[in-house]
Length: 532
View 1 (tube, rainbow, N blue to C red):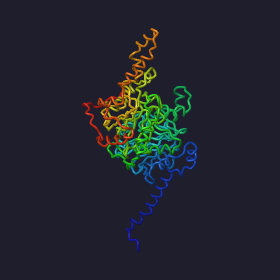
View 2 (tube, rainbow, N blue to C red; view 1 turned 60 degrees about the horizontal axis):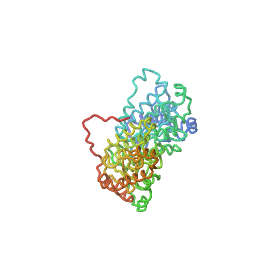
View 3 (cartoon, rainbow, N blue to C red; view 1 turned 120 degrees about the vertical axis):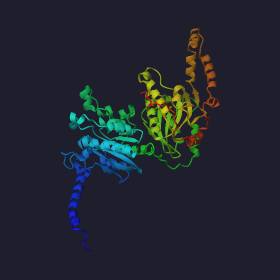
View 4 (cartoon, rainbow, N blue to C red; view 1 turned 60 degrees about the vertical axis):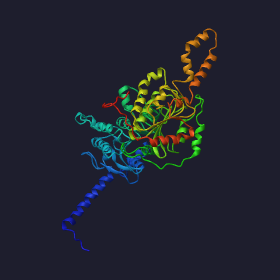
């Protein structure tokens, strides 16, 4: 068959072929295969390159890069490829996401003007599309060579303003995968979930060199900002993993519990078959003796769908457990006092941990399930020095502003203001306020109350040579008769006392009845003021 194309069209084909060949070459210059020496160097300091990290995280073949060919006017193709930051969109477990990955192989992952614009565009895209923003961070902040110019730095950028706008609209998840001092820490600090790699990742406002120059302090980078510091001790990051694959997988797991945005439907899973043996096992977990410890995570595991519990901040403030889980396939947020750590007492770090978790769940519509066994708030000089008054207020503040359903189950101790802050009884209008027969609900421990009320009397008895122990025992027994598991239900301070084996169906019933959001009937103010 003869070529019937017009002469002009036939002549244009070689020109297009040449342009496409150049385009392919320019693209290839940005890829890992074009930089074998840089890739080899990256392998020695970390497990994957920026592009490999994206490929590990997203659904195969779904990544569509934005700004791959971006380069400064003075740069040749392959020189500072993509200006040190890889951005684009992809699917993660079948749902859209916006990706940002720092490329440490390009000037230590620092951002030039184009890199900054790419990040800004990614955040704006996440807002516009209502898709999660996922940040894979490994590098420095603003490129110093550019930042040390008043003309170029004075206008600054609205990127952080956009981060604030995105907060609570679409989930933000970050993995700190290597160097992370300065700007990457600010980006991650605004995220809803942060994972780090132990022995590899760092984060903080300034690295050791800047700290040495500014303060004279000589400190190792991991001691300053490694996972042991920022995950376990400071709680800035949520999870420490053994390798990069684990850190990336944790982001996928985290996002799997949340909707794509605050107005999107919940990511439901099929409800598993009910297992009566798991329900029956709940009866033998919690000792009635309040001095005996047990692992509340076992209670959580048996009430929630099997294998569905994902703990957030498991190594920080261990006296409180915060976890994402599923209940008959529905995502929920779980908050529990951990009797194995400080008896489940609420400390400053525990208050911060729980308050942030309440805000996360409320932002994305996850109902809150509380398992209460709390001796109250920490007291004494250390607590006051740690500003527990404000931090405990923040915990109450966040729950008071939450619009999602909430259910509380008193497993054992429900003492004082700690009981209130854990949504006990009628304190925050729980959609179901339940208790096990082991519940002990009162203002404070019985022994402590007897000692406080009768301190002078016991002192006078001792001064008179009379042993106060028998009288103390009598008063404790007398008070204990008033602090009964059934008293709260008899006064209608609780909805019901339940068999532990019925905990799961009773929570499910309450959540099935409750509206997805409640009207707080706030006065016509512009905003509330967080205590800290």
